[in-house]
Each structure stands twice: as structure tokens, then as C-alpha cells.
Image 1 (tube, helix red, strand yellow):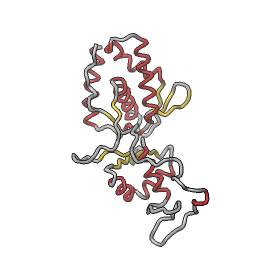
Image 2 (cartoon, rainbow, N blue to C red; image 1 turned 30 degrees about the vertical axis):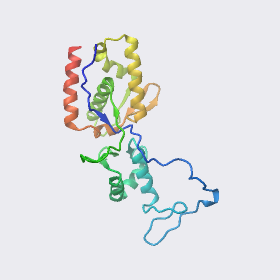
Image 3 (tube, rainbow, N blue to C red; image 1 turned 30 degrees about the horizontal axis):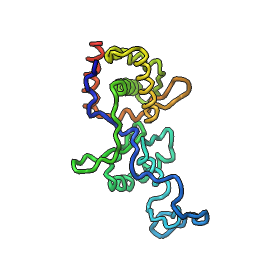
Image 4 (cartoon, rainbow, N blue to C red; image 1 turned 90 degrees about the vertical axis):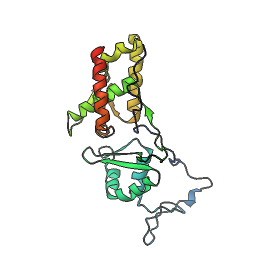
Length: 233
């Protein structure tokens, strides 16, 4: 049985691999003695390497790099870089805009991420990852758990996820083994994207970024459709 495509067009920036990410090694021909201590020029940020032409201070550059690398920046896991983002938010926004990227900052959840600018003629920079039927069902459930626990830390086990998604198991017409493989793949994708943060064993914390990453209208439409499908199952 073929599933209705209720998730068409639904994707998120959480696991985006963005172009322009700097390599981890040094450039060609760079010797060990070519690295210099930071040197401050009048009206210029401290130089971080030879021939450094950047103008942001080092903490702001790190915040910019981590936003571009993705999937998101959170105060809970990286408080120093989060503070650097807030301190240099406007120049960081300017540099992201030069790359056709928009900065989203949720001050309440203390998370930030980038997305494509909402301009029809702008190139698509963020590589979006399509969500499967079970991916979306679990994301909606996790987002609901977050909204029911404002300001609190939310965790879920793989077995609890399986119990929730069991309502949709028969829709695919596959065997219990097929459902287990699909659930394993969904769980792994959400861990890789940073939506689920492993806590040990089969438990994971739910990232607060889910409060922000989907729009209210999109969530309402999907929730209604998924509730109908679960009832039919």
C-alpha cells in the first residue's frame, strides 16, 4: 500500500551540509612557522593567521562558522559561542545575508540556526533533507512534548517513540520487521541532525530547536492530517 504524500515539500534546515565550509587543515604551502599570534591593527580585529583579512573578532567568527556549518547553535551546549552571537548579532547577520542566508534566533529557547532568505530569485544555499512519513510523525510528537514542557528538558526513549508511531505501522502494509527498520532509520536521522541528543542507553533529549524550526501553520496542517491517518489506522 502506498502512503499519501502528506509530507510533500516538508523539509528542514537541521541537518544541512552547507557549501563553503572551511577545510579543517591548513592551506597549501602553509608552514608551521607561518602561523602568527594575533596582531591588532587600528580599527581592525586581531589577526588570527598570516594574511588574515577578516574584520570580526575571533568569538564572532566562531559563531558565524558554526551557524553556517549547522545544524544549529544552542546556549545550553555552547554558552560562550552563544554569547558571542548575541554580542555581534548584526555583523553576523550582514555576513550571512551576503551568502543568501537568514539568521533565526529564538531568545526564549536560546537556539539559533540559518535558513535560505525568503526571496524568490535567491539561490537555494541550505541543502534540505526530505522527511519520511515516520520522520514527520515523530517530529510532530517531539515538538508537542516540548510545548507541553515550557522551559523544561524533554527526553524520550526509543521504545516510547515506537509506542507513539505504532498507530501508523499498519498503513505501510509491511511486516513488524519492516517497521522496526524504518523506526531505526528515523531515530538515527534525528540523532544525526541534532534533533535528538543521546543521553545513554536508548534515551535521547529533544532539542529545543524544534520549538522554532517549523511554522505554526505548517505544523497545524500536518498535525490535522496525521491525526486523521492515525484514526483511520
